[in-house]
Image (tube, rainbow, N blue to C red):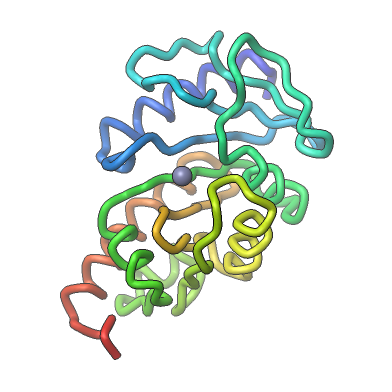
Amino acid sequence: MSIEEAKIIVCAAGKKLLKEGLAARTWGNVSVRISDREMVITPSGRKYDELTPADMVLVDFYTLKFEGHLKPSSELKLHARVYKTRSHINAVIHTHQMNASIVAAAQKNLVVLDAGHERILGGKIIKTAPYALPNSKKITVETEKCIEASNAALMANHGVVCIGKKLDDAFDVAHTLEKACELFVNSGKQTA
Ligand SMILES: [Zn+2]
């Protein structure tokens, strides 16, 4: 994928996050891998409905050096760590989606109750990383650890990270995670 193609895709994905209610509380962020050391990511501090592809930021995920007229998303380090540790992953979404945020606020691991959800999420248990300051080394390391073999992790009092081979897969994970968290909350099992 070229840089230009990636910028168009990431920009559209940022708007999709908003449209599909995955960025309910505050903005999330989206990135795609374009090579073995570079990603294109949404910028920080901009409203997605006003963004254009030219606002997307090219980042070297080893040095975190970036090219673009805006700064990369504040969760840059988490995206970078996922790409560095998982060569088969090409898309990362970080959201503050509602139901997952409820489970994350309770600082519980999610127990996936539906077998179909389990297949898409890549595990029966989706772990919640302990609270740490956004974009800190701690949140980056702890969250990445929690992803383990699954395709998502929750972040206490913050949000979620969803990963995929393709951007569509990561969106699928984010939507499925919402459904799985809703089911879990309604089951009353979160107090167990
Ligand atoms: Zn966040």
